[in-house]
Length: 187
Image (cartoon, rainbow, N blue to C red):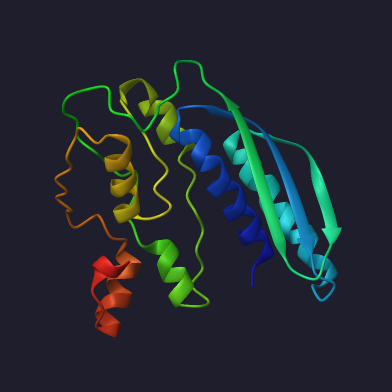
């Protein structure tokens, strides 16, 4: 419903993978296919959101393609530079603590509650501050469960004990679950 917000979210979601390895975003390419039934303002507003997210991320749009097509499609590609060795998903220490940079479930809430205004948060400033203190990192947009499973697959010699505190699930998700008698863990 909001092409500018959509543009922001598409860029922030794509750039989050660059940030997770400790890189500074530099360049961005995109391919956008828009159906004929979209209003002419759709592309303008989408690109306004893309531009604001790129500015917030310190990256520049260096190319791509904009075309008409029967179905809506978007592909974003971010490129960045690491000033130090990249952060990987592989643990290089015997024991570590895992932290999330924010609560979980908000993406799923936007899917099951149409009209919920989801705006992804950039983690750029946080990663700049933490980069030198982090042993591994991973974008967790697939959710807490899938993130932990991926880390276990990559680090089979380790085990994970998860103690989720009250801040693990987004407050809006908790409200939605309470109103609809759903378990927050589902998000």
